[in-house]
Image 1 (tube, rainbow, N blue to C red):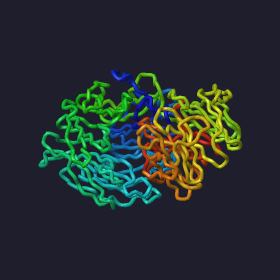
Image 2: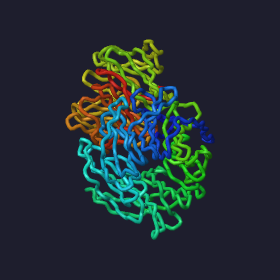
Image 3: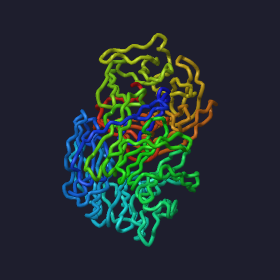
Length: 619
């Protein structure tokens, strides 16, 4: 939708919506210790585990063998609760909706127990332990992803003591078989592995960092090409004596050129490096910092919300949490968040206080503290948010902190619409009334608890009973206008008035559920559709002009189920619209930040059966 393009931002954790700072402003962070006594903690993550609308945290205690979660009461006060009291050497962890039931589960591994486990969340943060592997030799990392492309989430781990990178296939019911070894090199202590489609061929590859032990002095960063049937070919990115002791890797498109680069840190050489992909999986090393002592973690996060991914690091020997601003031309400028983070180890970025900017979480090994560094600032604009409309015309707009703004607009039987009708950057309500064929638009949100009416000149004849009315910025001018899907044909207009279509083309067929959206980030919307017959979402990047021209499908993937209500929006403010669903059966919203098969990035409780979703940047 048109309004979201006023400020580009990127969300990398916790479902946050982040707001841009002035170009010359550095974020200011204020530290808050949310948990103490987490002995030799190495891992921290953040998510809403109990479904109450605020952001909680998760960590591990290596000394006492504890898996913990830290419940947020909504005011920023956290209470530490035990998920598992008996995971010897609890070390790495991960969060994911592993069973895809709409809540966030926990994964953890015991380095001393040689055990990988996941903890099934019942939706109210009551966790049930499930053992994946009790023979993982020095388990050092665990993440989730769909390795085999069958729609469920598999596991990827590294076993430091065994020198292994392995994956576990999910049978579709969260049963995991024996580990399947991707690489085994006992002299290379495998530290961390991540899923990534490195060669952009549609299947999951792997990137891993290996530490290196004598007589192999150098560490190694490598990626493993999935040949399409989970047979892997190893490609070494770097194995050099001046980049020894690789401890952490993080794949991300840091230069926004459409391919995956790799961030990595060398603990022994105190170096943060970016390996820039030329698009053909040939990598060039760029040193970002060579004086961060005993680095442990590296991640990407757009902390200043300028649309460019920045770098976030933790280094143990200088007790430092730092970030490096990406200037968009290949340069990075270091800023220290905390130079007294004793044993800075684990890191994560999330909007913990739901104020519209990314905060940073730190697991501090030597102090035993879990710390949130709250970013100070006021958001200037939000990204698209899901809005739900009751059949009787009551609209429910939900702020990121869970509070609601409600009003009445329209009559029973109307089709709700939302768009930026005047190009001011904010999306406001509209209605299509099938009984009369009229559309009613307003350029202002009705007052909270009030009743809205169409603007003068905001009502006009458009369409007929049986039409699906669409909203989009078809010409990329910053203003949303309307379109119609009638049987298998799309008609789009660039003016909000009764008019002939400026675009007329074939896409879809009768029975499809159709939306407007920008799937490729070019600034102009085209068409998404959901086909209940096959459960696929289809999208095109074309807006043909000729009356008989077809629009060609740019992508198709499974998402949701036939009883879900689909919606499209730019959930992470990266300029690209992606899919979401409202699930009437349990009153939940599930959003994904990529137009591909995969699990949801954000899920929360909202709405009731019979309500209809729309989306917009209204806040």
